[in-house]
Image (cartoon, rainbow, N blue to C red; front, side, top):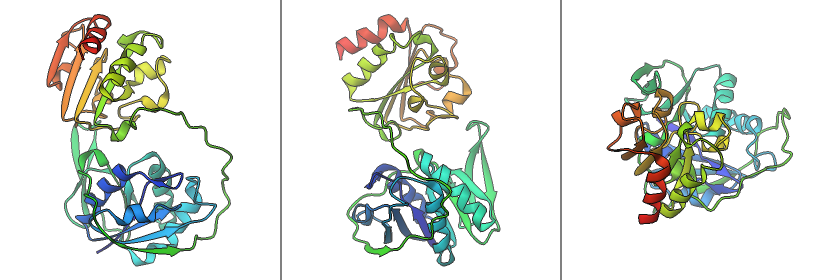
Length: 304
């Protein structure tokens, strides 16, 4: 079966981690053709398991606009039974539009492939796994990348340049405002240090950042911390934030509400620091420290 995979491309550069993990998932279905909307074709061609790369370079595709990207995918859809993408912010904007234009359902956050028509996806904040079988002629899918290993590099797929589809003209790019950071990107970081409501203030969140910087880690936050203004929105981990699965996840001052656990419980090692020994976070933690984070976190940072 032929699979068209929308690569994650930002400012002309391939997001290798998300794309390579989606390739691993897509390989379980069939032969994978990667679509790079806005350059990055050579990088995608190096991912093992990719049979072919299509590159569409056009001014309408260079700034992550959903409508022209969806129109491009639909124009190519006739040759593919499966149209897939990593479940990133961009793909969650594009793929439902693709499904609507094709008049089919969209399967979001797929965490397992049973066969070409049957898939697994988490429901109830990850407390249950739903098995879904679709009879749609075109299967439109986003993969939860935290549950798949990244495909290796070293491939040499052919690269073909294609033209863009007609732009629907429903949106236009004005400007990008990007927060600059020397820290790793949250969803692909090997280590994440997160703070919750217990941190108490935006000023006190600096102790979380200091520990993260010492470890070369990304910084995360619970929804409670974000809603309270302690941390920016793009740090939020959880059901309504980002899903992460790093090698090490350190949660400080996070009680462990089910919505937060849904975003990080696949982490390889979970360390929890909380003064409440009954906090739910300790039920999923590999290592738990019942302590005041304002003493424990700076001390841990110093010893590191």
